Length: 305
Image (cartoon, rainbow, N blue to C red):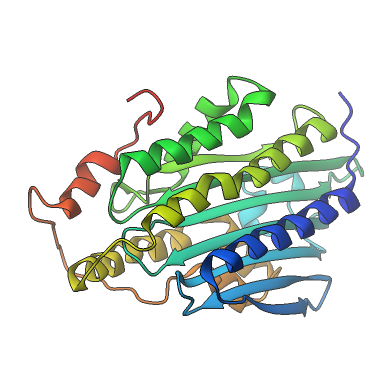
């Protein structure tokens, strides 16, 4: 099976995807996203699109990056030791949105392309990506909708993909030190190239194109739900879990920081603006806060239950 990569086509798609997502979010929020184009010493650069103190999105970013490097860092080569120290090229769109309303979930989406070679010069390329939802107050309607769009994005490329990538997402976005999930999952995949470049690229485009369908209806439904200090306080507490995962486990964050592949400000745009930690805090039984832990965070099949 041929895997002849076409990086210019991937880059053109990613830039268009970033623009399309930002335009849709600006329309919903009513506040323009900042645009910051940057260059990386040593190769490449990117475009950061960021909003802070928006009407709906308290803090969020939609980033494009295209960077290169002379030697693959440990975070990227741990599972492919034969590629350690090899020159590399990476590009992708990554976004994290933290809405102000605690009833509206945080969301993450990423689609990316990576290219390197073995010591004898054989090209090695793959795609990765996915999207996942992190609610603070659970709504079964939202969870079902989000997972349905994820399934539908993968369906044209094989019925086996959604169960595999949902399970991968559930396992990946898990805080081992807390023994709990970060959110309610979605889909996650990496090192994807088994279908050849064109088929693999088409699958990644389907995932990227599905993001707005997956998230915007949820955000529109929840952005005006009444809330008070209790809900904001719990939101800030649960956001702490998001910070812990990104700084301890997230491969993209670790790659960016270890390789110097991206600007720190752009990498850290995933962090929420207001966060709290407490010592051994537990929600009261029977509350909506407790329901998040019992009814939403444990992995489940949202499409059949």
